[in-house]
Length: 59
Image (tube, rainbow, N blue to C red; front, side, top):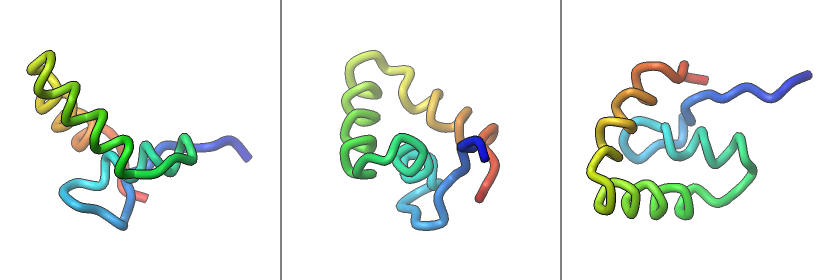
C-alpha cells in the first residue's frame, strides 16, 4: 500500500509538521525546527504552513 501524507493527530498547532515527520519517518521536532528556520530566513514559511494546513487532509 502506498504511503499517504496526512496531518498528524498528535499535533502542536495544525499537525502539518507531525504528518510530514510521520511520512518521512523522522522526529517531528526536526521538521518543526526546519520549518521555523525556513520561516525566519525566507519569510514565506508561515504562508506555506497555512497552505499545507488547508490542503493536507487530517488522518
